[in-house]
Length: 241
Ligand code: FPP
Image (cartoon, rainbow, N blue to C red; front, side, top):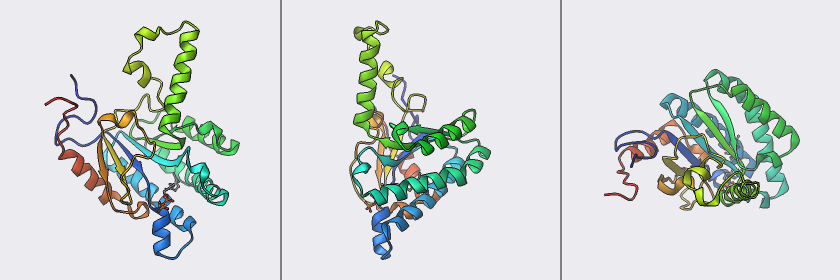
């Protein structure tokens, strides 16, 4: 069976995803408000996107706002949305210049209309770029993604467009938010927490997982490179020997 993803031992990953965690603890350690941690987190996003370009990654998927993050105080949600607006406004030129294609995963059309319009514009402007695909997960939850896929498949079956007996993994994958991205090779979580928190559950089935104690605002090119080195040293067997 062909190996899905980053290929043989020693090769680097093609697609890396990151659960960016620890902004709050970074701020707390400095007696700063949580928003200061998120601001520093946005700087880490800038650094990491640049590093991913320089390393020649094909795709980088960042968990910026989960479908569960709506449970946070309204002021923190507003801070995060403000940072997202600022990130897109300030980074779009560089992203476009570096041949980066922007993609959003999650049920993001439920965000505020000005953000949806801004993202639609950024996606359209970078659609033909071919170096890195930067996928930002917004209002994303893996169970929600699977429910959206299931609803769509059931509608297609009801309309006679798909035969339930012909359903296979490729049919599901083609309907995931990540449909045209390479297989997920490496999933990193920062800040010492060891769980997946409803992120890319289907896609991570055969991914290598790297958990680092580094808090997200301290993440940088060296940390990304170290995680990729761990990946390159692992033997991937996909259930074989
Ligand atoms: C987790 O830290 C981080 C988030 C919930 C949001 C991630 C957001 C950013 C990195 C900034 C903005 C993003 C973009 C794309 C510009 P936490 O608050 O859960 O940290 P804690 O567990 O230490 O409290």
